[in-house]
Image (cartoon, rainbow, N blue to C red; front, side):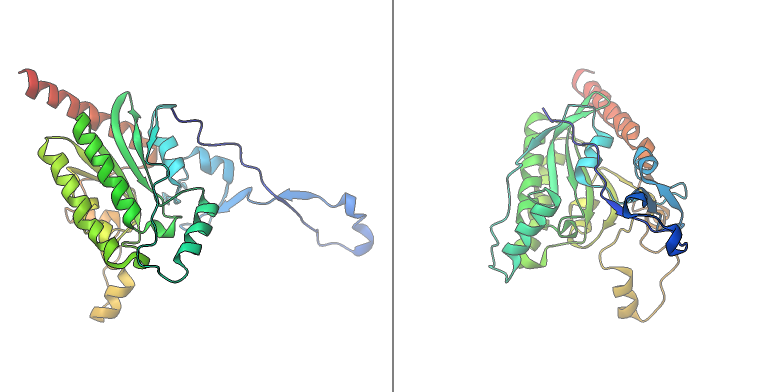
Length: 298
């Protein structure tokens, strides 16, 4: 079983000097220490938020802006306590193309994030219902999909198919990983085939699109869910809006490629805020379980 994913955060401190005459400043020992990181500025509205309150509100500002969260934070928000069992924790890429500098950058990113690659997969309970879950982490190579992520996803779908359990995937990706070239692009077809086998077994697949979900991930498993949910304001698309504007030489509509735009045009089934996401997923799993019971015994 998993341990508690979070520990109390230790803040570094920095000295703050007040604007007053030198003779009134006193000694070094009298200068106050103010913790760094105690306040966070919202990119959406510009408001300063007490960091502890921001964490309690699932890293969502009052204006509705959703801060990006790590894979472990996401699992903590969604799964029942102490129910997560991780799969393939040590599975990583071997740098198939010997891309210059890639191996060193991998090690550096692994050290900085504490992740082996940009996806965490495993099994857990949501509102008491068992499910397999995969969570992408944008802090690892911008959540780009390489061979390791493709393999971990396929293994998860295969396990879920064998055990006849639903799958929930939280996407957060800049697309295919350029350092792995064609091997990365191959994962689009590979993962899509695993999703198809899971679907043919009559099992539920839910995707939750978070900011950003772009490139090859959008063009494959992100849009193959039986039910597609999204977080408010999430950027969802294939090419980015700036690339599209430069290509067609036109200004795009307001809010283009945001979750609300996609909901209006039928690409997303529902936008769900973080405080309601766990209960929403629990309700969907409950309905699926009831449907499966009705089909089997009625």
